[in-house]
Image (cartoon, rainbow, N blue to C red; front, top):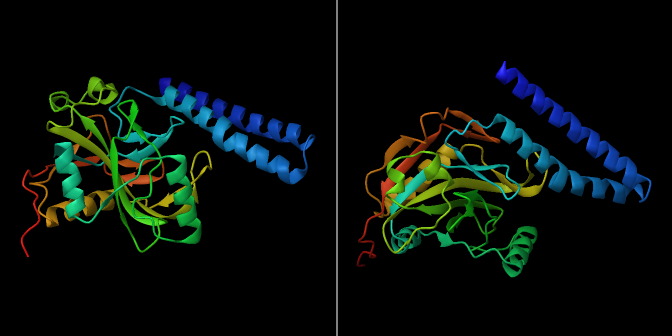
Length: 274
């Protein structure tokens, strides 16, 4: 009975969303030329109405399960959590540098404009910024990427959030919802979400402009861990489920098996002598 009521509530929210979008278009169409009316309706629908409706739907369906995915700034499902590394901040940066990955620039107006130019003109920007995704109530602490070709249109990339090792001993609601960033000079757990950008697309639920991504996040998880392992920067990789109540399946438009690959970062990552 509870499941039926939840589904009815979600359907009702969908109907309200459609009604709002239709009425917005009818209103702006009477005030603006048709082309501008369509553009204004798209903007309101994609960036205001639909994100709000989806957030409300997630609240209805949420069961306090350990989340298997990050969240966007609108509170919508983002990239799946699929790997974790144990070590210090310096060890994390050294590991990806040795593997030939670039640390992403902070997201600013300047870096965003540089990203747009590189994307449109198909020019190189190996340290292109990432959009902000949220886990533990905060945006990513750091991100790394490896371009595919010369353009940021296609790239391997991963975001990380630091979590205190003592809190990581028991994966429960406190672990996932705590917002404090630990001292990353000490060894911490770097919880990561890795995906592969493949071009240009619109988001599935709200039709916002974004990167197109490869749906197989399991393959991207395995690729990232293989890159680090091949360069001798991590130890033995273990596989864990992200919580007893998580099931294999789809997160947003991604296919994920709900497995997190976990490995320790090695302390000695000095380049080998040539």
